Length: 207
Image 1 (tube, rainbow, N blue to C red):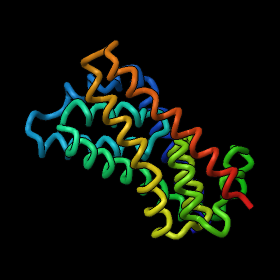
Image 2 (image 1 turned 90 degrees about the vertical axis):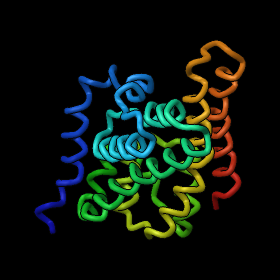
Image 3 (image 1 turned 30 degrees about the vertical axis):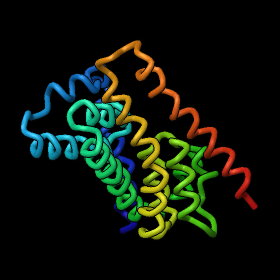
């Protein structure tokens, strides 16, 4: 496996290089316009884009979440978006499992990642990282996989930490057609509040 240790970051780099020239086109409105009209096919299409996002750092996650809010009624949009976010988190995490030998090199190249070591309570660490919206998310997932975070703790922390942000981004998508309305402006506030909350919890829970 040693000879394949650079494969995961190379996959992410290739995805980023491919999608970077298209980043201005990857908006919620365009994604919704490209989507099939039938609800089931639209859900499959959006989940496929989440999988593509997981293999590239350049694809904006918020555009996919907002597109879900445009395409589906709120409960269905929330379900599809949460499943999509988990897809985008799990794929690089599993790739990271193959990258343990290159963990220290990855940390040296991205110093901020060195602070993300999961410690004795990996589920809580994952929860706080997802609640804060730690970025770049794909590299964070790759790093946590390489760090040996148990899959169960990763999924549980990821679901609980991601749910508030997914809900907020989905509401943004549902409000996009009402630009400038009180609902639109209010939908932008939760992200900043969640980042502040995660920082507060991190300070309270740290040893």
